[in-house]
Image (cartoon, helix red, strand yellow):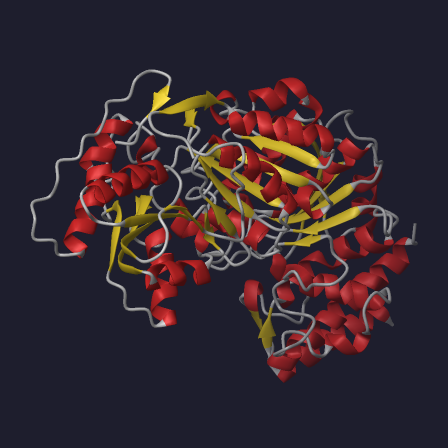
Length: 265
Length: 335
């Protein structure tokens, strides 16, 4: 496993890449990368997922910005592709599609990823393979009933090689998730649905690493509920900014880059 | 081809699926609580390790099917046609059709064959599935075609919607009949005719009965069986229309978006001006009732097809009185 300091640096690099990608058009899904930077760092470089063995599902397709940002750092895609993010004809589309590289499944219509991940987990069980399936989901898509259909199914079938990470950043298009639908108590809900639940500060790489690797209840799927901030706790961004779809003028961009680079220094 | 009333059989799909799955270990069978009703109790009992009852969660079932297919399985998804089309349309579009996965969606109780009223009557399932890129839509006419359809759709790469009557399934065609996913075939009549009836699924026996009655009353009529609504065999449809003075489509489905629409599109694009009528559900939701009652009330009977041909040809003689035999137990006759 990479050191905590190196995972922190990777998370900062993810934020920096994402800021530069979004800056080209001046708006986009930067908040999603800011909230999930540590999650992507730990998943992809924290010894959690085994490359070319475990499967990865990204349910909220607009989070691919975080995936691209980490993939470029790990040499999975060309850094030069990042600057074409979201442009007409680019490989890296703003919302994931079937063309999205190096991911086993990415969805765009929310609430569908966990079901696909269950398909992978069932296929592994049928084949007697030992690989794990990881599914990244977001809190807003818990408003979709399909997520709970899938949650019940996974527990009923004891899919203990399935791990979900939930980016609980309390952000959706219309504002804070709490202002739209009450999802809490999330820990109790998932526990009552039959899952092994770990709740952590999603910006704490050490806590995330422990949550993914600690011994789980036997025969249960695992969920790591990562409590995060849609603005990545960055001082440079006004608290009133719309985190779901951040607008990034040159001054704000510079302030964000300065804050990240200070952290990297 | 056999003569009506047709002998019926039970569970031709369920048996064919088990036989195929024994030879094809990549086949997995998913259901949503309607195991016996979708003939998959046979699969559950014979190959339990590859049978998964997802429960009443069609959206989740489609997503799971996509995941399984993405890593190499051929997944047969089974429930009533209403529930595996209307209820999970976005899931089918995004998790199955767009990635062009090997998921075979099997929807039972098409059109007004369900006594359960609008909640259970899949009257627009063909229209919905036909609109999805990559999707093949199959509406077989009888048990012989159903048995062959199972292997045919498994061999066809990509998603398929298979529309199946539930319960007693008639045997209209002999064992020598070959279901062909590429072609619509003329099953009655030949050469230039007064009328050509293009039919699919449960309307094929009614089309055959109507054609026989019309031939007896001096109107030469052919029947083209169209088991595959998409991709439509447009060349055969166009050729049939060019050899006929009028054409009538017959489908156990709303007249919007199904066989009739597909045929009209093909003819219009080919510049064929043969007058055309559509027999089907007239853009209405139906009601509860027996198949006999509903098919008669909503215009899906043999007499409706005859009348449609009669009017299209503007025949001045009175409409002949067509005898429609009452069905007897264990036999199938069109309404």
